[in-house]
Length: 281
Image (cartoon, rainbow, N blue to C red; front, side, top):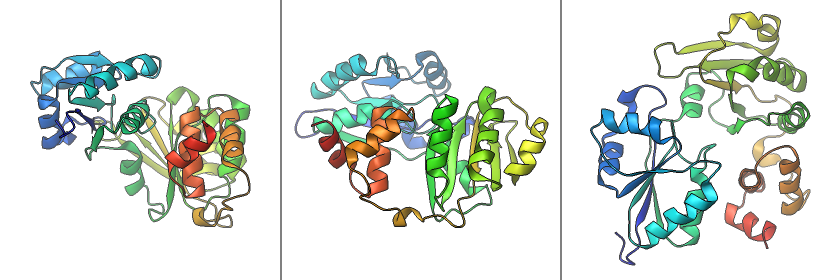
């Protein structure tokens, strides 16, 4: 507990496939906290059983994050220590844990992040693509027009682009990427750290001409070369539109508002809090 008698919110990464990637520190923290906020309590329950950890689980996911988030904040304010975990990988990365961390910070509650497994970076370092400058986009909008508009916005960035994608959408997403980006190098990472982990290093044209070479099962990370002629991330015009306009544009493309705020903050090189305060005033 902190000196102000508030609890601590721990952001605890979990394995993305291989249980051996769980860190000693993560196991210790999960065994010490008062409760664990989890996306899927059954899934997390299996992990806890493996490490012989018995703690109360709080169901906290995208569809109940407002109600349960407030309840978790009340527990933290009462001095309880809470761990937030994702189903796999880092909480708060394409994950409702980001909202919980934001609420905790707003209430001056200590947020302690633990390092650990992350699918995007795991794929990147074995992709044979540029690791000096890259942008993580997570999941694209599900609808075709919104997805295509989002890809067009990304087409001029020089840095390597990293995406997550579901197997049932992968074929159409790859075709949309080829239409938006032209032919670029791509690495398709599947089932990272698991028994059937595979890396397919190719280019968009070759992939789209032979989509049957991909096994459409499991979890995918797509790592794509950036534009050779476009703007570097730090060369993108910073004040071509207001924060409100930039956030509204991304929301129209299908991004949740809080993710849009984070992306705009990154684009303008300012803190997320600065953008949030202007957009939500």
